Image (cartoon, rainbow, N blue to C red):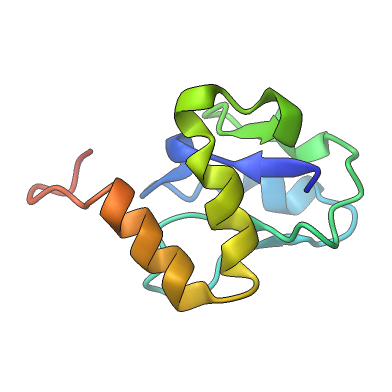
Length: 101
């Protein structure tokens, strides 16, 4: 996987990264998804999305901070088994009752 979207995108879904991606590898999923996802097989490692993200949510895989490493697995899993990725995301980062994490 070249780039990974992490926690800062959670429940925000800023889409600036989508508009600059030259290969359209950033996906929103369905309305229940809480964040955007970068397809690991389609990403060409250009870095355009990382520079465009106003929330600093995107990292190259090797630069993902240790405390956010779960997002590497979640991003990959989303394109294999979306329901399991959603379940893992919600387990690790449950929605708060007021909608703010």
